Amino acid sequence: MRTYRILSCLSLLLAAGVQAGELLPAGAGDLRPASLVSAPLPERAVERAPVQFAWALDPAEEITAAVAHRAESREYWLVAEAGQLRRGLDIDTTAPGAVIRISPETGARPVPAGGVRVGRGGRWLAEAESFQRRAAAAELRAAGMAVPEGSVVLQLAASHGRGRFQLQVPEARGRYLVHVFEPDSPYVLSIQAERPRALAGESLEVAVALSRGRQRLGASRLEAELVSPDGQRFPLQLRKGVAHLSAPIQGSAVPGLWEVHVFAGAVDGGQVVQREARTAIEISRPTARLAGGYRLDARTLHVELPVQVAAAGRYELRGTLYATGPDGVARPVAQAHTARWLQPGSRKLSLPFGVRLLPPGYGAPFEVRHLELKDQSRMGTLETRELALRQ
Image 1: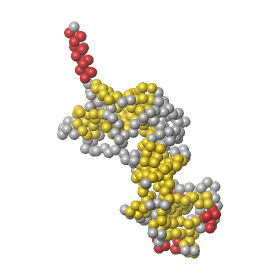
Image 2: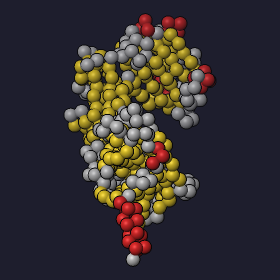
Image 3: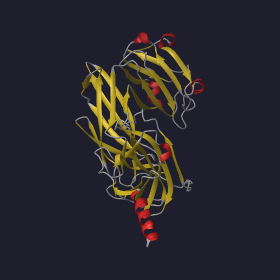
Image 4: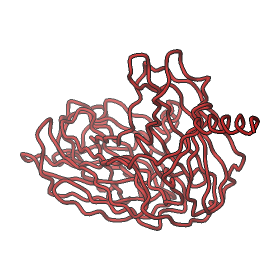
């Protein structure tokens, strides 16, 4: 009987070290799949070996959540046929010293560095006074700039000021991409998504603004489109400076970031303004999600989370452990990652923070923040929680 009581007490003590509960509700900025979809594995080889690791953090260093990148553009692109370039292609600049790159598309004739002329006001400018610098493809590549063979970069002489110019390439044959960049222009097109990630089928808003300094301008032409990693294009609706994005439910079979392209045109006091901006967004097919519960082993500081899986693949879980310091404030003390190959069904992933990573004087209460579930096979983020649990 005495032995039985000792074993019972020991079991109770061990059980007290393992605490189970439900994750805190997802916040407004969290990613959370409403439903799951199956998806085929990519054709490339995918690592299947499990891995777990953790490392200590400096509690004095704050961790900030990722925010969507704000893209700002003082540039635009034109696609020009050979006939346009032989006659003279119109380009509009809003500041002196515009930088122009001409790149041949597949099958087009290379552009000789000395074979470009600039015209203005009905006359062709002398070559010596046209450009303040020029560079051919070999020179650009030596400087680390990836450009197609046969490209040329030219900077208009600042003495010409701004306005409309004609760009002529007498030897042009085929189709060319013309890029106009105005580093000193006051006109800026900015775009920023409300968050850097979305799930297929979700809606997302992208703020769009064309401005001169601090003054916002009305655009006479404003278009936007969503481009998938495999090149599919989806037009976006723009209302009151906001592009409304609905991520296609089928997603993309090609891993990678999606892009939002915005094209803007305006006339400001007689000045023609053209701008194009791009920003990247991660759009993932929801192939798995956290089931909502957790088990925290307070003796080892391992956190186990059940996962609902709809498509076989290698899934990664990462999170940051916050512990309470001597002053009663929770601070980041460790980060853990784990990845395993999971089949469809109810599965589990664990974060092995480990008590050895706790700084002296730090302990309970604990929190897990910056929790992320990722599909490594398809290179997508499936779920995020800024604050996942507090124990």
